[in-house]
Image 1 (cartoon, rainbow, N blue to C red):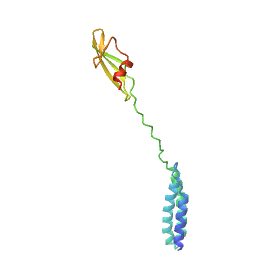
Image 2: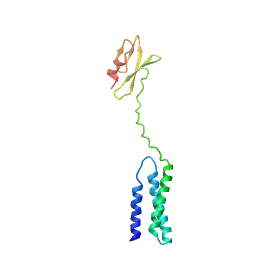
Image 3: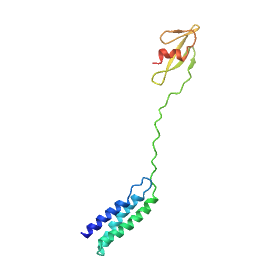
Image 4: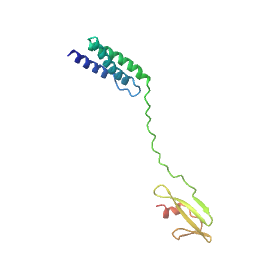
Length: 148
């Protein structure tokens, strides 16, 4: 009965000393050291016919030593993950020319761009749906037809 009381006292003592501190390992070191110290003290105390006293002394020394060692061990620092950055399409050149064609990038409803290819026809340009423009149309003019 006496040994059971000492064991229970040691468990409560270790639990009380092993508070959770997210910034260092003192509490965890004290709990581990206290448990190992109590175990070793119990074994040594049993050899000298006083198991309970050995557990208490070993647990106390183990807790102090474990806390000292634990405070020297650095925990990894948790960093909040950076928020995901959704790449927005950069505004490409609004008009590019190649031979007798002109390509106009028109912003569309999905946040991207639709390339509208216009072919030179006389003094103006023909659109992909056969529409005729006297000059290169503006992005706003093409967005009504091709920006969906």
